[in-house]
Length: 306
Image (cartoon, rainbow, N blue to C red; front, side, top):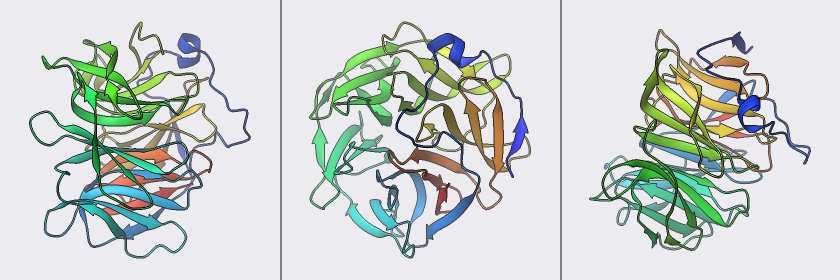
């Protein structure tokens, strides 16, 4: 049973950026249960993403020899995860997103001097760098509502934190927003109206550190929606398949894992306890199913919420 709480909500999101509801019949309800999908054969998973139909999860982790690796696993058959790419050019894969048709997997890799965005076919094949001129140190990825643009958190060449928009085929990275109040942006989600939901581990206000921002499509401002969010490593956010509810893996004041849901229209916050998790990290909802991929960085497991 989800535990209902009101916490550190700074403003009513709907009053700031409008109501974001679904018209395609997909559920806007947050998950009511969390179950393990796979463990073993990998370490320190950072992020996971579900295929559009929710039947396959892709995730980034390290194998038992500490080689950076991308894996896939069936949510129906469960069992051991299968590596689909390993080693070079991967160095520190930290953020994942799929194309709208589920045929291309994009990776934000924080390794090296400037990091990189990589892409590969989910049918197999090699990882290839994606040109993203002007973007360095990518920490999170999201797909735009038009399915033609990627959004990434990262930094300008001078180190300023920023959010970028990049064509899915690569090119110049357009700066959507940069500077304060962003400090260390990580996971993000872009909803059907083009609003960017951006997590930041280090940003804070009077309520505490760990902030969820809302940035409108014109990049005119970054509004604090919720703060004092004790995120895992790295932090993530996703909206439910039907929109309207933001999902953020967090830990409570005692360090217990939970899935925090924030109703955009009302500001109501609910907590779904996740005692089977240690360090809840990345999260991503399936585009066409009521399925949420969840990553446990501290317990070396991948979970499913529904």
